[in-house]
Length: 456
Ligand code: GAP
Image 1 (cartoon, protein in one colour):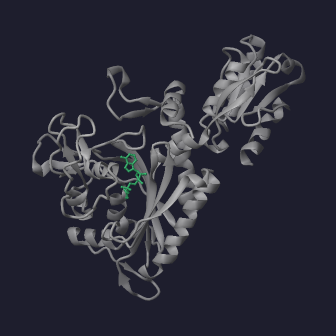
Image 2: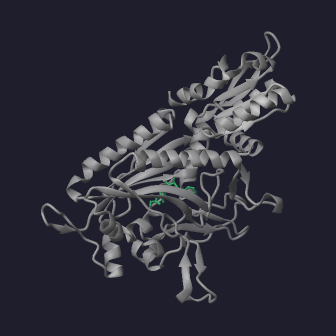
Image 3: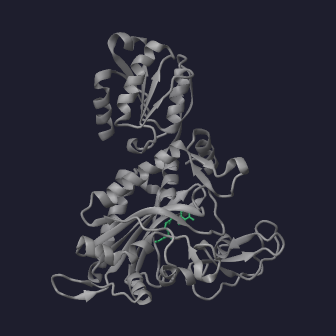
């Protein structure tokens, strides 16, 4: 696996991800998705949506607001409990997460209501200064609605998308006339004022989540939980095609789960900076709906059409960080290998991003052998035609060898070369990214040829 610096540098060089606000000296831990990063992220979101929502009969979509009534966060417990404990260095004033400080010394953090105690031997990791007592720090970004900055106008940027799905549960039930079990899904931006962001896009203050709340009758929770675990495995194995040995299925033991959860599995990944959370799945019981019922005073119960029984549905919640999935797709795709150059018998190192074909930001590159007008006359209409079905790059600068290497480095599955023979035989050379094998294909057949390849 590559180290993180290799990936960060490739991302900047090739336009996947840039440091945020760079011309102003940047903003720590903020990142902008460049042209290729945007396409890669879109592909992940589209595939996630197709797999978990569109192809299923039991899911409905939602796109709820980022700024919601603050009562939502009172009900969900975020106002009271969505905090990390931090300790500040009395010398350099840097702040650290207490659980990270304890873990670094091989000690178990305790996730309970009582404030943690830091042993005196734990000093500031940056300057060895003395640390303050741990203090809770709420991770929600606070803002104000309208022109007055007072308590009455305070609001928060959502730290997760789940709240929107719970507060719309009754609306959705009414308009869709769904029967249990069914899920509400959405993808959207979330904001957390993380104390220690870092590791590139692994932990940032602004990120995207794809998650769904799957409403069930509590008597079927174990079966449904297993069903979703199976689907999550299928997602990683068959769609994202990751090396399953790099995933860790971490069953969170009793005492470490949130108090309302009867089962939680964290899906972890062996990143170059350690094995850490990628995403999760939790059985949240009826905690959320019961809290919203209590705080809003609205009846959020469901009536079983067959038995007439009225009850609050329980919830299984699979949740996915889109940016972490993207980071994993970059780490999995990165390969370095010896490859032949244009010189007979010579090889050099090529970097190739072996994304699954559907995931590649550019699917087809059209590379006329030279800038000559007669080649452009064939290559440009071909590019225009292929753009209707594929994401296409057109590049006529530099040597063909350099252009192949560039396309390898951004993971383009197929390069099409238009050369002077093309004028005669009306064919192009199609080069496969992984095997580097080349094949002549008739121009009028190339679209179907590619469609078949992408469907394999
Ligand atoms: N509704 C459940 C929920 O929000 P979470 O574990 O707090 O659960 C969901 O967050 C996912 O969002 C995580 O599993 C992770 O993939 C991603 N995530 C959380 N905090 C993040 C951050 N600061 N930067 C990037 N991704 C983050």
